[in-house]
Structure formats: C-alpha cells, structure tokens
Image 1 (cartoon, rainbow over the protein chains, first blue to last red):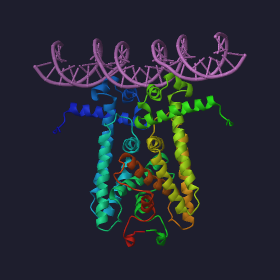
Image 2: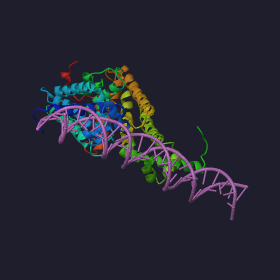
Image 3: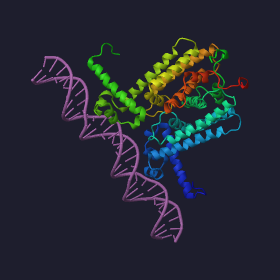
Image 4: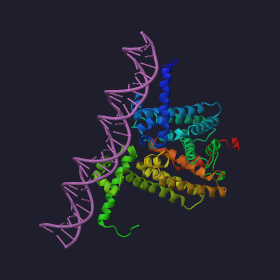
Length: 210
Length: 210
DNA sequence: TCATTATATGAATTAAAATTCAACATATGA
DNA sequence: TCATATGTTGAATTTTAATTCATATAATGA
C-alpha cells in the first residue's frame, strides 16, 4: 500500500486509467463483456488499443478491475449503513435506504453489479469473480448478525437470520431491479420494503396457522 | 401446427434435436453462452458440427430454442399453480410450492432461467430475449391479480399488488438461488417464504409506526 | 442389387476480436 | 539543444470460434 503525495505523472496515469475504466463501464453495462471489443473501448475512450494494454494486461483484467471498483462502491455503502447507531430495525432500515440510494446514484453500474452478484455470471473465468461473491456473502453475513441480535432481543421473530438476510436483500433487489427496468411504473421507497418485510402483508391476524 | 402421427423418421429427427438441445443446455448452464463453442456441443452430443447446422441455423438460434424450452417448463408450471382453486393465500402458496418444485426438479436449467429472466442478459442480441422477459412479466401480472383480489377481499393489506408480486418473487428467487449455490447450508421450504412474507417478521406489533 | 435420396461428417474457410510490437511523439532534465 | 526515458499509436499478427460445403455414409424402395 503505497502512500504519500502522488506526483503529477502518477495523477495523470491514474486519471487515464480511470477514464478507460469509466468508458468501459458504460459499454459493458450496456452490452455485456462479450459484446464489447477492446477496439470499441479504445475508440470510445480516445486511446489506441495498444495503450489499453499498458494499463491492463488483457480484457479480462480490465473487466475485473472494473468490477472490483463497482463492487467497492456498493459494498462500502452497504457495510457503512449497517454500522449506523440505533436498534436492529433502525440499522436494517438504514441499510435498505443506503441500498436504494447507491443503486439510484449508480444506475449505470447496477446492471453489472447485479450480473456479478446475483444470477449466473459467466463473464470471467471461474474463480475470478469469487472475490466479489465472497464480499457479497460477507455483507449478507453481517446483515444476518443484525437479524440475529434483533431476534435475541425479541425484536424479531425467530427465523434463520441468514435466510432473513437473503430474503430482505432479495426483495430489495427485485424491487430495485424492476425500477431500473421500468422506471416510474410502480413507485416505491424504503418504507415499502420495510413494511412488507417487517409488518405483515396478511390482514387477518387470527387466520395465522402457527 | 402439423398434427397426426409422426413417422419414425420424424420421431428420430426430433429425438436427435432433443439430444442436441439437452447437451447444449448442460454446457450453457454451466459455462454460459459465450464460453461454449459449437464444436464442444458437437463433441458432447456425439454429432458433427455440420450436423448441428442441419437442426439450427446458427448458435444463437440453438440457444434461443433452448431458452424457449426452459422458459416453457418454468412458466407453465407457475401459471398452472395460479389456477389452483382456493382463496388468494392458497393460490399464492401453491405458486411458491410450484416454484420450489420446478426449480429443484430442474437444477440444471435454473442458472439459465435466472440469467435470462433476472439480471442483465447479454447472451442474445437485443430483442430476441424479449419474449422470455415478456412472458415473465405476464406471470408477474397474473400474480399481481391474485394479490389485487386478495386486497379487495380484505385478505391482504393495501399495497401496490404488482410490487407485492415482485417482492414475493424476489424473496423466492433469492432463497432458491442461494439454495442452488450452497445446497443444504440453510434449509428452507415454502412455508418459510409464506411466513416471512405474509406474517410479520417484526415481533412487537405495538411498535408499528403507521 | 443398385440408383436415388436423405443425412451426417469434419477439414477447410471465413469472420471477428484479442494481443503484440516496431515506430512515433512527447516530456524531462543535463 | 539534445539524449534519454516515458507514453502512445495502430497496422500486422495471432487466436479463437462460427459457419460452410464437398464428400462419405446410410436408408429407401424399384
């Protein structure tokens, strides 16, 4: 981890690198890894193909760096939200809020983040996307801890905390993804997610079967 | 729609076609569209490359046929479940049951179905995967109708029915997908989904903020 | 049996992209 | 100013995989 003031050169190097990544991000998130060529990235970022290879050893390396950046943005935002002070419900609320915000703030990346995090991603040879998945797993486990504490405090009902984490994240992803695909069709907010999840959808309490 | 008794030849043709599709399905669902070559499909299905082109005009056509078959299996199963007699909660329960069953019965396809239905799928040129998405949309709308009826009958609380459909499907997908990835780690069943969704996760009814 | 037709084959062709690298440009600082 | 280092270029090369098609094989029925 090199620290200290970066020289003008270094800053320029990083700026160029960042420009390439940014351009590639837009292309990849619109059309996917395999439908974007290095030449396209080069043209769009106003560098020559050869130059791209000065920054990244190959296409996959470029993509991986991209994904790691994207994942950093999402992951750090979600993890920070879980550190919020307050009780478990408040932490979880903060987390849903953060998720909605970071998704809406980074619409371009959402596709990519979802593709690598959910569903089957075959963009990069097996094992390379593992770090992203692992990190996502880590987040789910952290969220599960919050649920677990909530359960211990009798704040939440006794379900497998990890499954609750998966479920809550599943609702959030589904609604957010729907929103990304059909913006404005069915407006929703964090409260809706929290209400569906924590309060009951079912009206008749007395019909409960347990 | 040609009807009547298929000749031996026709049956053989269809069997061959089916064998190719089945082999391709396994390969694609393991490694994705772009990481499986026609030669591999040929070798694995014990035909020659040229033969594949007698059945399908090109790789994309082969893939599309596959996806349509897969989608038929999932879609018809889910739609049928929604026709179950009973009240709205029972219909929805049947639907979750059907989803779990069809996922577990078709583990090989789940990846592909998810990839095309959820998340960003760039496998096939734009517009070609639309029919799958449209069909999935149709299912969600149907599910939303059930929610709507349930709301009218005061069985469910008043949320946007379409969002409820998205949310329920989101939970189911997330849990199922998790199960596919890490089988046995956190066992769950349809009841868990129904319980989380319809009954409350939150313990203290009196703390509700609405 | 043999001519005709239908089917299957896989080496050869074509197409598309990734990657390389010798040549060029620009900045640095002696 | 010039020698050196650093960064950039894009045509040429290499790689990879889709697609074709002349040839071979098998089935059909006269």
